[in-house]
Image (cartoon, rainbow, N blue to C red):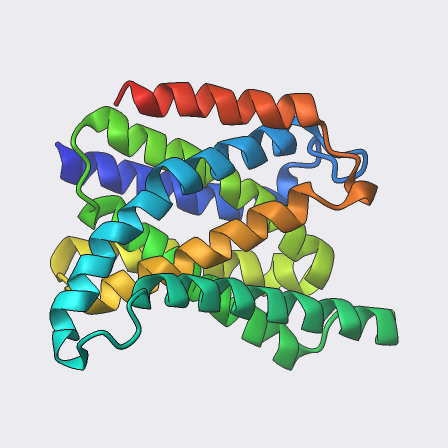
Length: 239
């Protein structure tokens, strides 16, 4: 049951990316309330599920690296911080290039940026089937939180890379989801590697959510953001 449901959700994730260019009803400025609600849901997911999950992965890392003794007590949180830093650095590279050149990013910069999001999406696809969901509702809420987060990411990447994203980016990110799910369906990756990737993902999610919601020029709706956050928080409490 969980296998086939995860497959359906993987297809759903893939369709969100592939069809993102046709979602013209969602506006960036003034920011669509749909995107603000999505931001609230993603923040709730990070703080109530993803960050607490890191404590489990921290134990995995400590068990593997116990010979290091007290060195680097918070390994997993350092990886999350590294993930946030990497995504922020890539974001700044793209912004500086565009402000200097006033045109679409170079192919090299585009593929560097896409590579980080390819890993990002592949991990999400893998966790869709490999994460320990206690119920069907748990998987549904996972899909809900990250599915609408993908919509926000797509808008941001299309804004940064324009036509080259529609031509190549959305296809590569669609493939990443299916590849991650396929690996999870037929092969179990080493727990240490998954712990590190999940931490890296957590840092990326935090950065990607906050950079979309906080800038004043986006004219975000705080009411919609708070509604998404509160609504998803209440749902998570009933899982």
